Length: 241
Length: 253
Image (cartoon, rainbow over all chains, first blue to last red; front, side):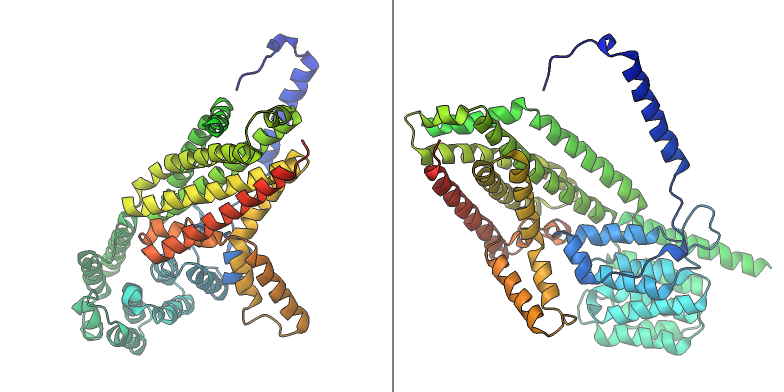
């Protein structure tokens, strides 16, 4: 690992100067060309799952998760008042579909669709995200029901579309077969029809998910608790107005 | 056993060349990148860390073994030390396999070291399966690198051939799936290309079935699929070793 070297002063000053100047130029260039946060318009069309699989060189689980992080960065920067509000949701769900096909056992795309992208203020975009969750639910109902349960609550309270919420709730009841699916989830339709507000419904859902062990990741549980607190604040502010 | 001396020399050369430091840097880098990315993840942060570190360490291990084998053998040939070795009272087969045993042991060591951090995120059985599979995969890479370093004339083509073989072996299944997919045009050239791809796949190891990161994410594989994956890698390793011995016995000097 070692090699014979001449002392530093053996290097001519012109070489020193050239090295320092080149280093300064490189740093200045990078500072001037600092990348901006990707905007909504930068989101390219989704690649096919097969193309992603080829690019993963046999590591689909790793690429699926890294692609989720890449996707998350679009239209989300510190100064953005309405994150993801300008994204093309048709493209977005294309990406989510490709990622889910790459690693069907990953819950990240469904989590993002139900808990992040469907939570935006635009009902049309929310509907697209919820529709994605509903479509993908049928591929593995026994594992994907928590996202459809949340979709049912959003359909009722955000979209005020009771038939849609009941359709989602009924799908959980009809298509889940595993004994691990809790009874309250299978009876979601009754829960949707009850006259409770969004906060109560969200509290019951989060409590039930935590109790049933459906949420394993501490970061995810924390994110959902923060969402609940945010909802509490927003509803509290509405009431005081 | 004289061939064991050659194996020991291969290990000593790797140690003196600073491979241990490189492995340590790869470990630190992997953990750093995983820690950074996990801060960005909203869910599955542990899975993200396991997947990224596993993929990164796997690539590093393959590159280290391939680079070490090719550089070591090419240096031996260029310094004419190989000619000296051939004059020793030791069969060419024993010489070739002795060197290969040293490089395989190096892969085994790297696999064991790189498996340790995976215990942070995955159960021990899954990590053991991953490590054993990685050791077999590195043995195959060592056999391929030794074969190409002995048979090709210089370092860059040998290294490129080894890495090319490895990448092709890892992605050929995805290529076959694309060729047979519903979007494939039903025409004669397409059909011929599909058959050509299948023929190429027959000559490659099924590396996509070995050292799967999903074992670390979703639990250890069942014994049957694990044995199938490992056996495929070992069979191809044996093929490369046999081809290498064959070529080495024909070598003029």
